[in-house]
Length: 470
Picture 1 (cartoon, helix red, strand yellow):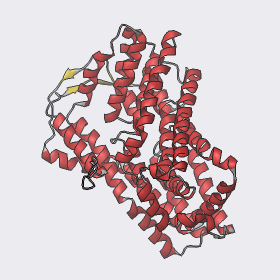
Picture 2 (cartoon, rainbow, N blue to C red):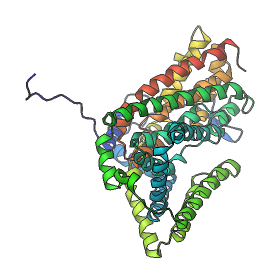
Picture 3 (tube, rainbow, N blue to C red):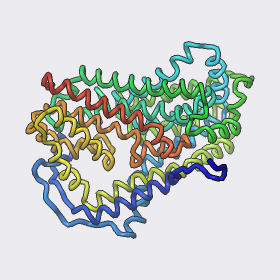
């Protein structure tokens, strides 16, 4: 082969251009897909869809002007998440300025180098914890602060930024999609489908355990290959520059003193995370309360860490400033929902997909439900929002198809596996942006896991149809 010939490589556009291209596509579809609406009613304090109430309505095709103002609307509708990200970014930059995290990473890296037990358990234990969070109290937006901690630790330990973001992102989403006690998807879906709250927990725990096990195996398989050849990492070049700039390349030889002040800062940080879990589980905290807690944490750790008031404020502002790009990505991701909703096409898509669920076999019918829910999840990736939209339709459809409502709820849950990869999820795109991992590299890397998860979902939907899961 001639040396002058260059190997062809498909160049994927950057994340901003990718999501905006998706916006253009959705805007174009609003001119093709007719408008439609289901009637709504209030059930158990929540607005739900009335089955068999669909009717076509005037569509509102989204023009050029609508396309270009949709990011601003997305910014407004995602304001809580965006504000949360900026506050967390500021608080964590204050934490970083105390030098407690760097000292801890140095200490952890040295212990990791000599401890086989730590090497073997680091990834499985962390991913299991995030998965458990998703399965119980619906951990989702809460993963964002952890990305800022786990990515640097993984870089220091010789992994890559892909592993750093995969641990919290895949862990929490796997737990969410196979949850057994999550009130935001299982609880709401069971309430709408008139199924006893949190019933069927035994089989759901099996589904959660198998899904989490598959995710851990996938990550360990990748890590073992990464150790043999670091260049297989999609982020190899970027991570090498980052290690050099942030001094991860000399972490094992760094003799930074892990002082009492450093320990006090980290204890405060850990207590804040404990408070986060207690607040979410016991007091039903949401983004506002969690953001307020991190705001307070940033001030407290700055004081304990010995930062002067001017330095503390500057660190907070700089940390928030660094995540403006992440805020824009979140706004663009939410704009996809804005365009679809304003055009009145979401209900039409649901109505159009419903007939495809019918099947001569309950097994195939439930598997089709899984696929339909995965498609709907591309547009509506809120667990509670999707439950309110689809379960009033899927519950009676499951009765007609011979699928138990409990199984229909499980198919709805599995549809949320796609949150790991879809570019319309504000949390996924925000986490990737904070980890500095482009979506196209992430999607290519995680695609094999998605295929395995879909196969696993199809398999796990078979037993409930065989033993009549009620």
